[in-house]
Length: 444
Image (cartoon, rainbow, N blue to C red; front, top):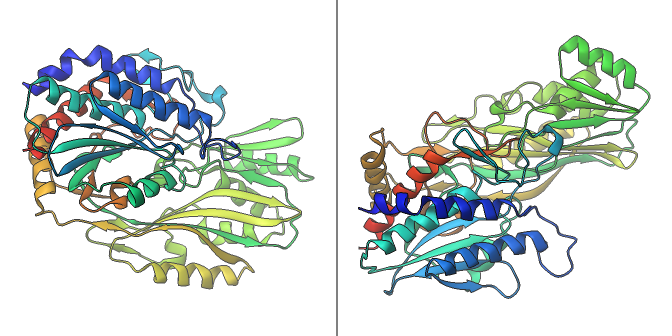
């Protein structure tokens, strides 16, 4: 059976992941040779090498935007979309396990990208390998499409979509189980003012991650430290810089983290600092996750509530800027959100600037793809397979008839984008078995 083939290859699968985790594939746009930096390029090439060693045909885009590995014959093609870029590890000193060490402890493999998305991509690759090892007939080709800047602007997968063959169906292992049939709209934007700020505040490393730290430098440092203690907010004073300590999380689930920027703003407001951005953050964001102080109760039946996360801040003599990530329910018009935030921001003298927008994804539960993946999941786990909605923005949006499918099981700890990110090895094996069974059915 195909699940036994996955078990047979588990040592090789884990070894491949350790190799891939060793590459710190964080975006580097200053690289003059490769579009996303030499480390992302190295991770792309390593993944293709792994696939080639398993018997796949491979293709590397000469410009370094994407690559793919393919197996089988037939006019139609089924795709698995994954990515090998990762968000920054942040302060490596906060990690118990080396961010790029691939250390294994208590049945878990640790490292940045372990669960997002290197581990699931490797599980999917070895899932296809398991199908190959059964001697199954591939009536459709299976293509593993490897993206390179999913955590930022999707330029890699967009370049693929504009130049290469589009699959008839497929999935991306970059979300949750059961299968995700709806993904909220993703809107990322800045609020800014060119008005010179008396404050020196910085925080946040990525637009899709709740910030785990925010720093302050200035004359109010000891008053601010006293206020942080009074409010019970974790902080650290290093010489003449004060850091508020939060907890990182994916911005699609802002309530799973602790937003250091918001905590900094709330404390600065309490000590009486004069800043339009601090006033906005403390009065219109505060300790909320769903934008209710701006939009009221914004939600729908298929996908749930709006989420709203302030993920970057820069207050300096050049002005004040924050970066916000909003995940919009699938039936809510983007214009409603833009008009609402613009109207409120103007009251604080702030300007709206859009950075990125991805339209929502919505595929009927009755579709053949959803039905097949649901059936496999139920058969392999014995759990409820009711399709779900997500605030995450996955590659499923990049092509028609693609959905997000795994790797996180219900009840699992959410560790994507967090310190000591890991992939449970038993879960990884089960993922590979689910993906193998799914491919078996989809290639018929």
